[in-house]
Amino acid sequence: MTFAYSSIRTRLADGVLAATLDAGPLNLLGVDLVSLVDTLYTDPGDVRVVVIDSASPDFFSAHVDLSAVPQYTAEAARAGGPGDASLGMFLHRLARVPVITIAKVRGRARGGGDELALACDMIFASRENAVFGQFESGTGALPGAGGTQHLIRRLGRGRAMEAIVGADDFDADLAERYGWINRALPDAELDGFVERLARRIAGFPAEGVRAAKRAVDDLTLAEPAQVRSDAAVFQALIASPEARERLAHLTGRGLQTPGPLERDLGRAVAELHR
Image (cartoon, rainbow, N blue to C red; front, side):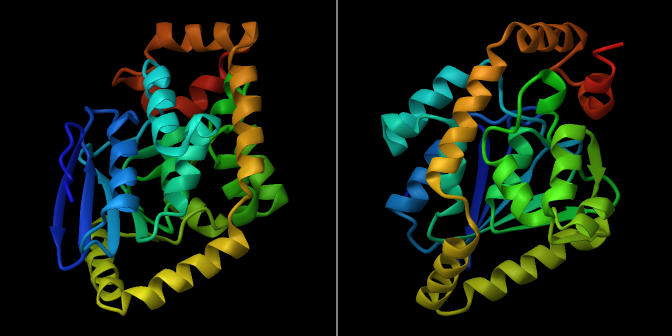
């Protein structure tokens, strides 16, 4: 069992693996996450619960690293097979991992970063500074890595429609009210709450916890065919001329760099047509 990565800091104690994303100020999703999930399937050792958080105070994860999509595809194919070479199917695999996963969110979780949080079993967020959003519709695409499937199941049709086609940002209180996350907690209480819950679960008989997770997953997670369909539609849409033009415009204004655009991406995509 090895948990050593260049962009994820790990610490294992009492069955709880803390996995802190540390990939720069935006914490763009990279290939180390694929390796971590692969290890949790093949050699989890004493790990009972994984808590995913961020080293950046401003970004849990801004979104996927748009410059690393080919590497992601290659890693996903290696882990799940050529037919599952997409971020969506990788995150579906994360959702089914045989340990409990908790996303502890401070800062912005958008696009693939939000889909990472949604793939976890539970999400707890800082009331003061957590932000959630699926901005893909503003670029001419749709959430293609599980966001559509998770939000429909969590929010219901109308609220999922608002979140997905509105492509706006949601603060933690509104996300809690909509059912996007488990709880919004005062920032000063977030770490202690999640640590207590993680240690509590890690102290229970492992087989019973795994069986309970399987039962919940079987009743609530999307079928792989649905995730693959979303991924295929996303890949087709994101390659369209309009989407390429919109992404190029956003990139020219600072997409994937720390700054005002990434901090207020929900507003930025709404201004593209003006």
